[in-house]
Image (cartoon, rainbow, N blue to C red; front, side, top):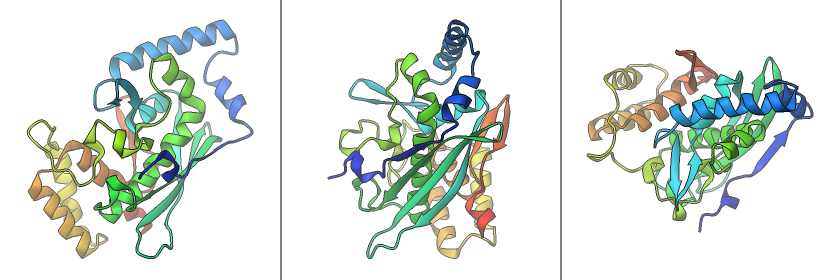
Length: 253
């Protein structure tokens, strides 16, 4: 049975966390609270719906897209320190560590793992398992400086990606589910970028076959983003411009 304990829950607030956290808003308590309220108001209008939140038993859990959007508006950006496969016989498991930086300083860090021993990931491709380990670590790291904003927005502070699959009412994160008529299909730009992976010499032949099958099956926006983030690196929207915040798999090959 998959539980939250199956996700390595190690979050390390750095000593400078409080100092950097306060610097995100005014040093005056009343003014800082009003500034936070204004940000929450903007977030409530723009970072809503299934692209940002997951409804689980009537409660709203923020997805990684919510955390990255809010953090980018405050000048917080992630850095993947490592994502390594664990040496476990008969198992595909990855552990990742991510730091959150602001103005060149470390604000917080988080570690997490993902394994095909988890029910939601038992049939997943290896790249998807590695990518989810990074996603979970990012969510944990973001939660340290930003959890109070989630509370002010009426959300749960646990990242959606950490929730056990047996209580997950939204299956849109399942790596093996094919998109149906109610899913948003990948945009033409996304499909073009994914097709380019097939011609990239750094992509292994077995990966190219999997990517081709995904395209044939009907690629969703979420799956396309997952693929592109894994190979090219995670990007976030900052003032209308997509900004790359970390290395992708192709950068490391």
